[in-house]
Image 1: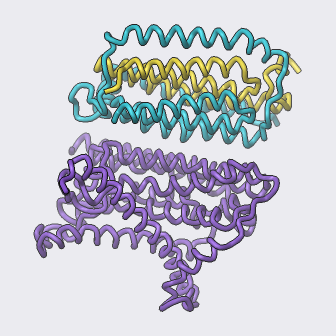
Image 2: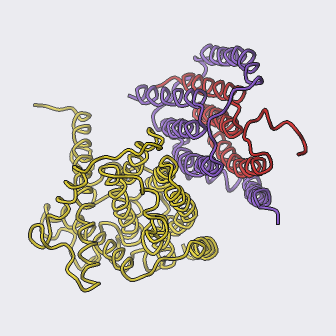
Image 3: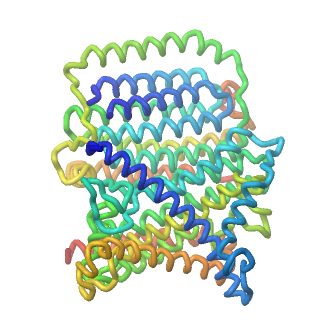
Length: 350
Length: 168
Length: 100
């Protein structure tokens, strides 16, 4: 059977989307398990250990439990918005994966295999989709018709909008160094000398600001005020049950993965190897050259997710006014100073 | 291919705008406006304005419309009530609006030969990228207006703070 | 290959719907949103004409419109909140006095 180039493109794209979605969702499920395990170990207990060997089937059991639970629909909710809100949250969390390059350029008949799409404004697309994600949170709180939900969602939207500024500005330094918003170009600009040319060294402040802002964007500890269970029951998803709750839950972890992807791409050289020239380009033949970058990428993302969990189990929650003043009075000015210094250095040395 | 893309998002745009008009509760209107803005972003992208497509998503749907939904949530704005003024608007406004739409559409379709065609993602001047072209003009020829807008934003921030502050 | 007039007709439709919503709607927030819709329609014509003339200036105009719209939304919504505090209503017909 002979296929035209366009048909190949269409088939491969659909295949890539399916594979990436499956991998991401599995990764989401196992991030939950990893979190419970690691926090358990840090708190000197076992974590889930009964379902399957080492508790490895726990995500499956959790999924079946959430799927089979009764889907409660409270009487006073605004029905359409109540149903749409978790879908917006989950789809926004998953869509940004589409512009992330996972491996090196590896094309089959003109279609790049290790990324769904490589567009000129990749970074802006990720930022844009993150900013759309606020609607999921805001609408869930409003449509639930519950004061805890509304307070939680107001807090969450204010927090996400405030930290979005610091998040965007912290990445400008990297963009200035790479001279492009295409994620592939940003990765390539750090690939020359292995770990030495990663942006983490010259852009350390940018990385610090990004990390703080990203924790706040994903509503994770120490900035998990929107769902502060000691004050707000569960925050914006108080009224949700069954699959709708599971969607919010998956969205949170998918957002963590996206944030880890962006941090890896921007500051840790994406899929490039940390060894640089120590490892020859054509090490281990064609197959290994294609697979190694993906391995590096996965290892880096795993490290970030581990850091997330570590921070959650170590740091206490901020107070709400502390959170706001930290974002506006510290992170934002620091990010601007970082941009200023980076551009001055580039102007005189670049 | 491009025509299909355009038609899908144009229809989405018009439906969203009509929904804004027909919905009674402000939050539904706000959400349909978000749909309009997101589809416009795709249409900008097909016209080669990549940066504007991203800015449309980030600034319009991500900031301005979030602000609107925020205010609607804060004021708990319910459904609107019909009053006498709105009947006059129906009788005079709707025919006038239809006239405007018909006149504009007729003019544009009449001049179709002079306007030409749009190519998908067409670069404007064979430059490096849409962003490079934009910033080059913005930071050389139009530097003063650009700086003035930053002052405008500063004034707007101060004005908003002063207006929304509670009197002590 | 899409004829440019299609884009312009779309913009004209959006603009007319914007005017209609501006006239018909009674809620002050929705009236404000219809102004945003009209601005968006005009932005689309700018981008389309910028494509016709192969000049980037049209897109820069849109950029400035976005900046002004953001400033306008901030101030406008602050005014709406102030009005709501004073009158407890968002209906444009009942906001008809200069003083309380």
